[in-house]
Length: 346
Image (cartoon, rainbow, N blue to C red; front, side):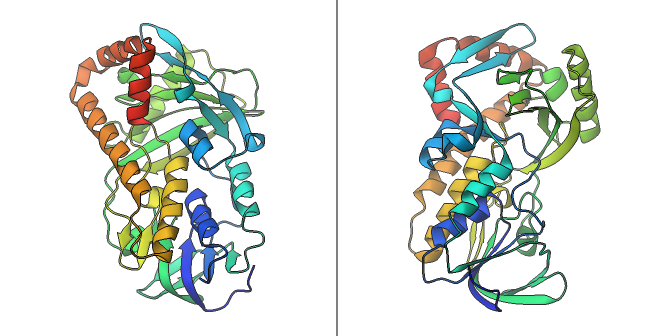
């Protein structure tokens, strides 16, 4: 990798899945690329770590870096639960450090890419960024891949109103073997709680849009649910994080947004890794070819449109939300119906 200088064709802010996938696509090109990462270490991030089948296949993510793979998913309602087995529903859990290491390995021989850690972007202008209040770097193209509270998004003056909050306990145990989803609108409104087993630990958490349930109320409901399920979190580490799913565009002349910074994450499910990988790659292709038609972005947005419409319907149901979840899970017993629903929303 190159030694840092002052001028770059592309500056990417954020070395998460979106930023690294963008850099990987640009590697080997004649463009000079700089990645700026605020943290000292690349990879670790508060995240449930779920990745669906399409991401595993499309990006050829090797099985060796996955924590667990599931061809069955357990769905629960206040009345009953089912265990659904379907190839289209395959989900894996992955540790974010392992994912980052795999992505970084692709960049180790990239002579046109420079990665700098411990670099907090303190100022952005139309052609340069300032880091840690002192260093300045000029760019021709800027990519904001810096998460839900993106500094690039703020610089562009883009509002963010659709924010979900996720809270979880990371518990060092191998007691849990099933990937489980729990619907209960009395506790989580139109969203859900989860149990995601990993290698050596489990993520047990929940999420909800803060416009429909405050963070304080969600936290109280979550702990009530944990108590009802007799889940011991005494050895767990409590974490919280935001999910921006408020998409308002990704291309703004020579400035781009990718991943959560653009709001590509799923509002109903919280899935963010796959949209980050897709959008980061698409942004790189667009930078290399200004006339590139990003069909993968169009597909992401079509899925988000379907998801958001479904979510709007569920939210409007109010007290009837649990009745809907019960009917939905019942319908998923039918293999044909389940496959159609999964392919529409995942």
